[in-house]
Amino acid sequence: MTESTKDTSKKNQFKTQLTKKDIIETFIFSNFQQASFNYERIHALAFCVDMIPTIKRVYKNKTDQVAALKRHLTFFNTTPAMVGPILGVTMALEEGKASGENIDAGTINSFKVGLMGPLAGVGDPIMWGTLRPILAALGASLALTGSWLGPIVFFVAFNTVRLAFKWYGLKLGLSRGLALVQDMSGNLLQKITEGATVLGLFIMGVLVTKWTTIDVPIIISKTTTGGKTTVTTFQNILDQLCPGLLALGLTLLSMYLLRKKVNPIILIFGLFGLGILGYGLGWLK
Image 1 (tube, rainbow, N blue to C red):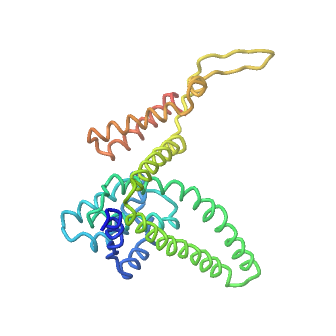
Image 2: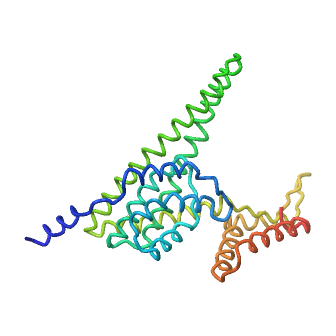
Image 3: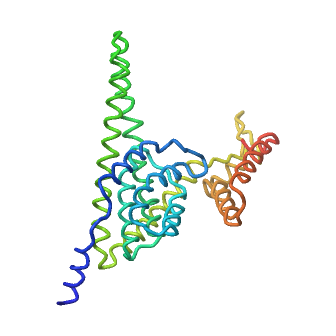
C-alpha cells in the first residue's frame, strides 16, 4: 500500500460522533444568542452554551471539556441569525481536535474571528436593513386596515426566515467543517488558518475605528479671512496626520492593561470616568 493510499484511508476513517440530537440542541440553544449580551464579550457566553452539546459528545475527559468551554468565552459578535455557519465549522473543528487531528485552540479561534465579521457584514443589511423593514411594513399595512393578522404575519414571516438561516447555516457549516477536517493534507488547514487570522485582525481593526470615537476640541488657532473665521482644533491636526490615532492608542492601552490582569470592570468604569472628566474640562467632546 502506497503512502498516498494510506493517507486517503486515514481520511476516510474519520466519522463524526455528533448525533442529530446534538445538532438540534445546538440549534435550539443558538436562539438565545443575545440572552447574555454584555459589552465586554458580546455573545461569548451564549456561543459557549451553544457548544456544550458538542463538547460533551467529543471530549470524554473533564479537563478537556473545561478547556474547550473556556476557549469559547473569548469575544464573539455577529448577527444572531448568521451564527449557524460559524457554529457548524467550530463544532467540526472541535471534533477534529478531540480525535487527534492537527488542530489547536488558535486554529479554532481564528476561524471564529475570521467568520464572524464577514457574516455580520452580510447579515446586518439583510436581516435588519432589508427583511425586517419590509416585513414590518407588510404587517403594518395589514394592521392599518384593522386586521389582527398584521403583527402575526410579521412575527411568523420574520422568524421563519431567521430560523431557516440558523438551521441550514448550521448544517452547511458542519458539513464544510467536517470536509475540512478530513482533508488535512497539503497544509490546507494551515493556509486557511493563516488567511482567517489575517482577516480576523483586519475585522478587529475596522471595529476599533467604528466603535471607538474620541474627539479633542481643544482650539489651536483661529484665523479670520474675509469675515470668515476658521478654527483649527487639536482633533483636526490629528485627523490630518492619522485618522483614528487616539482610538487606536486607547485600544492598545486597554489591551496592555488587560494583559497586566487589570479587572475589565475597573477598566470600563475608568474609561467612563475619564470621558466624563474630559468632557467637563472641555478636553473631550
